Image 1 (tube, one colour):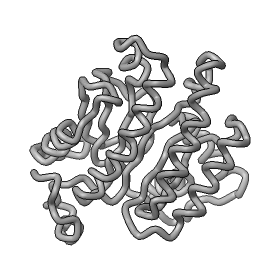
Image 2: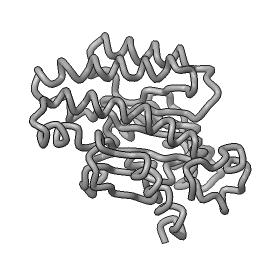
Image 3: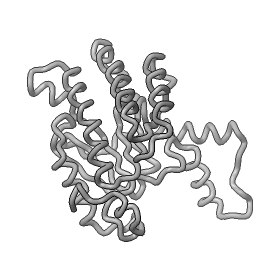
Length: 247
């Protein structure tokens, strides 16, 4: 499959015959490892990883992806040394604001923002506001994200609002729909393909609800070394599979 496939043609295809995933999610792993092998500081790896973030958005849009989710920062990452966070958190804010300012895609930060410093929350809100009417692919930026927290947050919102599924439907299906409507990714398709870089083969709490029937692709390259060819290989692998949706 070519990365240069016409996006309009791809989106016009029925879902059953589309070889391009509608929603691609990426666990951007390996910034610190990449820096360490080069004798650099962790923040240098994060800076190079920020460059890849913008490039992957371009590659995904060119391929005809509708939604791209990039896991930039987990809640566990906030336990890292203060010196590393002092360089990383402002970099994240600058990166998402630059991405939004391009006007190509609506940028939607997702996560538990209550645990973030005010300057980063402000950057995320500016990015969301500036890009709200952008015409292209939706770009979710997962910051202070944890899948269990997301599900707990959804259940808490349901309890606080007192909403409930209709009494005359299938209770299991209706509850699943209700929970999905209270997730950070509500009104978006679940990820068809999840890519993890740096050779690790685990989810680490990423999109736990949404990833129930996703396809996975594990790439050896650390995130700062992730290339267009690596992304093409992930899409090619997805296109070659026969999805059985859990069966």
